[in-house]
Image (cartoon, rainbow, N blue to C red; front, side, top):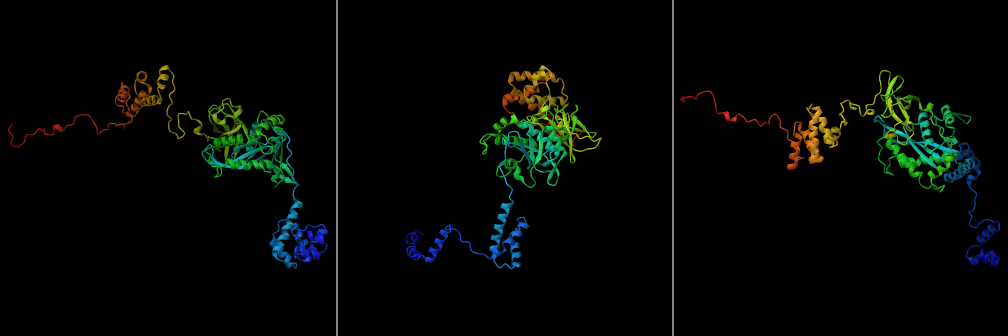
Length: 514
């Protein structure tokens, strides 16, 4: 092109550039027409006459027809080109169809206190209160403006569980948002009529109770709640035991709940990539735009309210079901899930909060198989101080000091408690007098020596006067304490034998003189 500009002749420019004059004329013509010199040259194709048919096939299949199927139809219509050309033409037609029918996306407009998105994710398998290995689900919530994430483990996705998780979530973030966005599960949307979702009456009542509105996303369009979708993926990648995170299996629901709490502290305590601020700090600002959480939870969704009796049971359907200790007089909610009765309590309303319920809202306290009147469901593990072990055997009595002597004696060590239980079981007389002697021994010789002597006395079954003192003196003198115990059996005795009398008889030998 530079040579042509100098010579203004195609032949002269071709000699200078070392190419054919026709090449010079073609490039000059493309430049004069305003086309790029290196732009691809459009040549006629055999498929050009069938473009309308290809677009008709793509539109009729909503952009899903396969290229080999389209090629067969083109061949039937007289097409003589190759299948590779057909694949390229169908791919271009599909790209144009997707561009034409693509949904217009826009960034999520976040306003403080307006939106909260919720979703479910599959959780790990853990053992329930009855020791059975069961699958769990993770309730995940995402507060849109502050990007605050909440993860709560539960057993199922029923309406009762959804209401429980929503109540716990609202109390955890410190308020209620204007709208709650979720997908079209049967617990939220009953059906669609003319594309309009019919809301579940329970969700309407729940939204009225908390002062919020439950909305659902467009069907088959998870992009409308992409924030919580990403939160579910992150929670599952971190909480589920996998080789990628080297997590071990969870032994109980409490352990899984603790792991979820640690996960929330980690993700909400680091700077978010989009907002350049920590979600927990942003939530403090957003709380000023949230509605107050009602004092009482939504009892209709949680089941029927009951008061725990003094014997740690609740009556439901004329059947008594046991609950863990420290719940006497508390109000709980009882509901039926399948063939099980689930009992929940509000940990914030308990007079004495158990260790497993510290810092939590609505929690599941007991789960039993449904029963019939006259057949109560009592879990013996709910009565740890009962004089009967969970397996039915008598429990070992627990000494409790009632006097100064008993207090001082039991303070010697665990061996004193062991000796006292064994002595009482053997019916030893004048135990209190022997306890005073043992207290004096511990004061003079030290508690460690007294404990060793008490353990040895229990193993040997010696509870007489001076036995513990004698054993302590022996241990202090010889230092033998860990030697194996030797207990004399029926074949061992200190009584002298009768072997020396074997030669004496009461008869006279033959030939012997008297």
